[in-house]
Structure formats: structure tokens, C-alpha cells
Length: 109
Length: 307
Image (cartoon, rainbow over all chains, first blue to last red; front, side, top):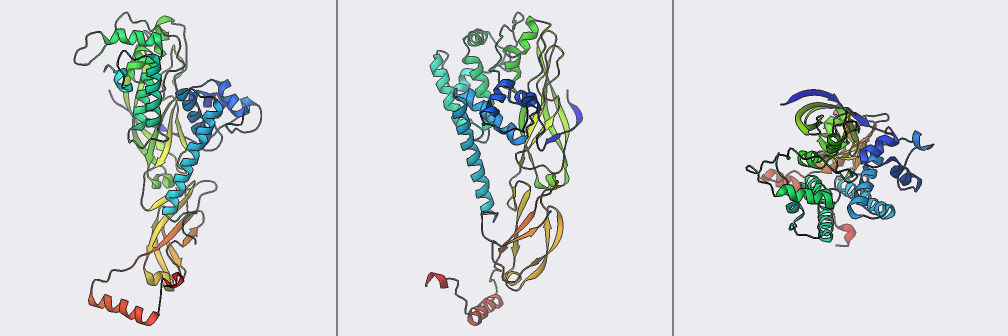
């Protein structure tokens, strides 16, 4: 049976997700996320853990960290190193596309 | 539901040792990891691979799966045995967004069968959504088909196909996440459903590139417009604009239109990147005009090369 529902999506623009929501979205425990922030592998707003808020970028990074730790059974530092490289590659690919379009790293004005 | 051949997914024989299962999984994870794979269906393949590994790497689940796989099936269709009790208690490795097959046999729903008092919020699910750049400027409605799982009191998982009319707010940028509340996995024992997160990607477009909320648009201009300057009308994602091309412009010159990038507080900027396009010399008259230029302009584009 097919239903048609109208749904409004909430844009995760800026720090919006709580610690618990971020952990849930990554399928991990809250303490796992706390450890990542305390070890500076993941950014968060200032303050106590329960007042931390996270945005889209942290959600994407956190999911990558969780995926790599579980997939390859590596420690969190190795996972963070791989995620740093993935982010670097993504950034370079964006710069390449922009350069091809004459963006900020392309032809001079 | 369809029976899923997890051994085939991992490219293994049923006799594969645990080490071989792990080795095959890691090899495929490297190949199909959506962040690095160039395969078009990488995300779907990775989902299947994770699901297969969650079962075959767990001795208890694997033994139960092997037992199930020996049961006769009607043209591939498969029904869980009536006495299947969902005996598995460790769900730490359950992949998010798993298939009905997995959810019915090995997922958290199994808990509901064992303990009616068990409550657990549903898993959050994740997917990507491709939109046009214009959607980021104006907002958009998108029809999205999702499979929503429900877990009955007996722990059985049923799925309903729902078509959602999703409102995408204006101002979104590449890589941002949208949250659709309660459209993830079903909760157990009356607990709420999880959420569905959609990661925004812009459809590839030869005209536009984005950098955060800044937008870069290629604008073809005629040589005389670039050489002596001109006022040109340009269709942009922000609407038609009249732009002054400064005299002496070359290909690659950027004209910044402040605040005409993706709308937000503050909005991004729109950069028009000029591209000088030569008119083809298809008639005698055209060739004559080029010859006149060559004669009268004494222009050597390779002067700096010492030619």
C-alpha cells in the first residue's frame, strides 16, 4: 500500500544535534562520542557534554569514524587519520572541480 | 521476502573460516566504501556487505542462518519459521537500514519476541538526496519513496512503502544534512521510531560549481565584449542580471555579485567566470574580418614564449 505524506525536512544548519542525537545517528553509545570530543578527534561547541551541539559536518565525520572503526577494527586514532585523509581527498576534489570552473583556485581575476 | 545469500554477497563458500569471512569483508569494504569507491552502486553494495558480515561474523547468527538456508523455498521466496524466536541479544553490530530479511531474522525485533516489556527507540537511517542548485535558491518539494518498517507485537517486521512529499528548505548547501523525524527504523515495544537523515548533494552541472554557499558560474562572452567592455544580460540561479564586463577582460576573470550566491544569513556570493569564445570563421566575410585583425592589430599571443 502506498501512502502520500507531506513532510518538512529540518536542515541541520549550524550546531543543532545534541550529544545523544549524534550518538544515535551514528549507531554508537554516547560515551563513544564523548571520547572522540575529549581526544579532539571531533569538534563540538564549548561547555559540558550534555550542552554540546553538533552540525552536519560533525555528523558526517562522526559516521565515518564509526564506520571505519567497525569495518577495519582499528583504534580511534587510526580511524581519525583515515577520515582526515578522506576529508582531504574530498576537499581536493572540490578544489579541482572549482579550478576547472575558474573558482577561487582557478584562473586569476 | 527474498532470501539473501550472504555468502554470495561476500564471495565466499559456506565452508569459509572466520578469518576468511573477515578478510573478504575488509577487501570488499575497501572496494565499496562510499567515500572512496567509484562504483555507482557503492552505497547499496556496502549496505549488503555490512549486513552479510553482521551475520557471518557472529558464530551464533551464522549457525542459525546456515540452518535457515537449508530449508526449501518457493521460487526464492522465504518465510521465517513459525518457531523462530529471535534469540539474538547482541545488536551492537547491526547495520543501520538493514533489509527486511535481516530485520526479521537477526535484528532488534527479535527482542520483542522474547520480552514484551523490551523497549528501544528505532535506528536512525541515512541516505543521500540529489537536488538542483536552483532548489537551494528557492526551496523545493521532492517526492521521496521510503520503506518504513513496523514491528508488530509478535516481533515480526513488516514494511510499508511510503511516498513522501519532502519540503527542502532554501539555503541548503552541499554536504548538509536534512532530518526527517520518525522516518527511520521502527521503535520496539512502543518506543519512538528513529529519524531519517538525508545528505544533500547537488546534481552535477556543467555551468555551476559551489564552494559552501558561494556559486561559480561560467559565462561565455564574445571577444569584442571582453576587449572593449559591454553590458550583458545573464541568466543566473538568482534570476536575470545585467552585468558590466570590464574592458580588457580575459578568460577566467571573475565578476563578483555580492549576496547572489545561495541564500542564507549571510548569503553566499555569485562569481561569474568569464570565458572568451571565438566566433567561427565560416564565411569569406568572417575570414576577411579575422585577416583584417591580424594585419592591423599586430598581436602575438606567444610573445612571452620568445617565439
